Image (cartoon, rainbow, N blue to C red; front, side, top):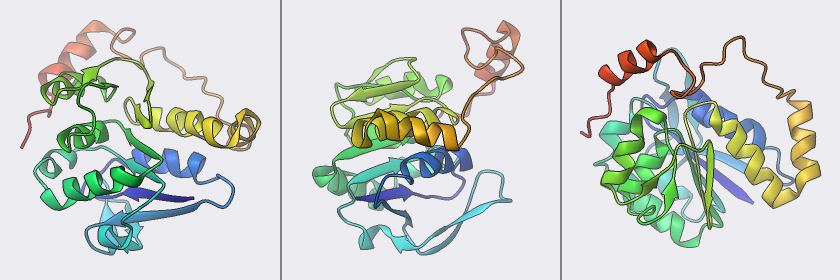
Length: 211
């Protein structure tokens, strides 16, 4: 099973690495990082890079497509090369997935029209602009389309899909071996729980203006 993780300039690292650490543990998985060009692609901090071993054109028919989000998602909304590849890959994929604002790229490609989907909480209204039905759920499965909320939700998405493909026990084994047992020191991981002033502050500074 070939798994293609899409990279673009200023992606968010955990969006890509979370699914890599979970879905990459599928039996006989061939996980590859892909981008328009081969070579290192810098994350949103500029201090970390992942290496794209293959170009988009070299991976036309992956079984699983994973699209991360990040600050660099905005300029990609008008990237015809990427959007065309997403449409073509989706035509034959078994699963088409996203993490965080990666769902906006799937939506821009026309793949989420009329479907329930999630994204980072600040970006949910943008999904609606592209005909998707936004929901604040952490992981949403609509047929073969699996979308995850912001950043850390990519781990949950990976485990959820891992269970669908390889069975619950295999997914549980991966969860155990990665010791994914969240016990955060604060209960502020969603806008429904975080202090209201923080929610409003980040809404006011939101970057979600399409470019």
